Image (cartoon, rainbow over all chains, first blue to last red; front, side, top):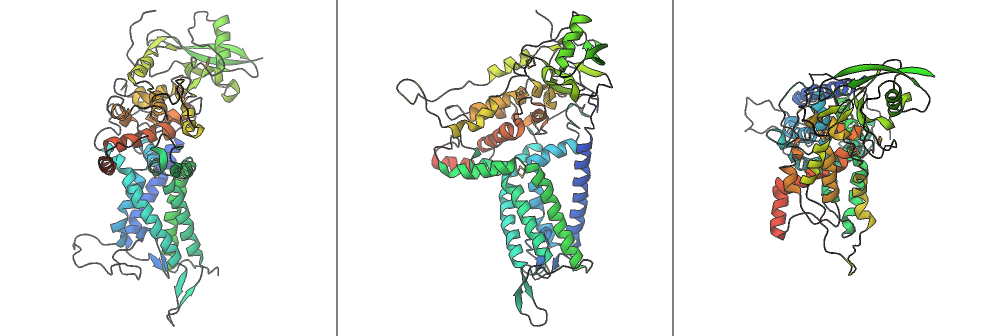
Length: 267
Length: 251
Ligand code: SF4
Ligand code: SF4
Ligand code: FES
Ligand code: FES
């Protein structure tokens, strides 16, 4: 039967006939990400209490310039502009921050929670215009794969930090001895969670074989692709757990360094 | 038998309103059963599209309590029957009558995607040889029943009406099935980026959540396609490697 095409009607902002609490998830995402951002920014500007014994907070690792013994190139360089606040964290944090910012999973979550685009599935949107990730600025989200490569480098550095966290220098004798404190376990756990997050990244999955149409032609990609795919199915969980462990590792080192928490020696 | 109340969208060509019907319901019923009972006893002229009643033909898509779902696969015991259940047509397609929408836009979109083009047959009898491991990935996409619930929920179509610029999740799944197919020889990345508008998808995963076939649309089809488009269009390193090797990355 012939009929005229009826124009579609737009829904008003937040209009929906959904009955469930669709707003809970974006709200929780908003609260967690905002809290993390506030804490991480505050912690990055502190430039203090980021080491304790052999521990180095992951927010400050690698410490390129800085005052702690972990600094690779020594203290703050003379050429550092006076007007620019200095902290070892500020030099390196943009990399992991942009890695998370451009992560496919976080993108989907914060577009909902922070930008209401859409606020929830089948819930009306506030804006009429929409460019998506097709045009500037969001087309830049496509550089995620480069930040992923940086994240792999950071992962190796943080793993090395865990190794270093096992060697304690006696302040009196200067002797270096092996010892496992709770802090080292926390730092190690953080590396495991960051590893689960980074290795299950969509760009990683692509590079490790997703780009191929035939695995049978080259066996090299089969197992790595299967591993990345396996981690990728729970990528959202790794994203949240690793966000928590990285923040908690900083809190732990900070608290020990400030003398508020005591770092129990396990053996 | 207990009674349940349904508010069903009645009207033509985009106009209309919810009309309330009370109907007896019993254990094991699905929304489509109740709609059929109402049609038989109270509203003979109620327009509703359906076919298989088994979740396999993709005809009975509608919005039940605001959620895009198949009427034949939504059991009444999943719904709160203390309140009236709303049943309305899909939002992303032109309204026809009552619960029926005109989904023909989807078929036009499908024609825009270049067809499966296999390599030359592997055997003299005109057949091909494939390994299971090479088709594992695309088999998921072949479960699609073309119910268009994913198209309905996708905000790019639903709220922004970019039907001319974006092919929607259903056809990104279709394109992924072709692009990742071990026998297919075409490269559709350029049109995916431009004419098919893959960049409009902001990976908010609403399509994945409504798919009755549980196809992991966003993670397994759209994002891998975005990565392939990235190789093709944006990645200078991949371009450089391609130049050196004299190839384009792909199969
Ligand atoms: S993930 Fe992309 S295609 Fe799916 S509903 Fe969201 S915007 Fe649409
Ligand atoms: S992908 Fe899923 S939701 Fe979309 S049309 Fe196919 S079966 Fe329906
Ligand atoms: S997709 Fe989440 S880290 Fe790459
Ligand atoms: S009637 Fe066939 S899917 Fe519902």
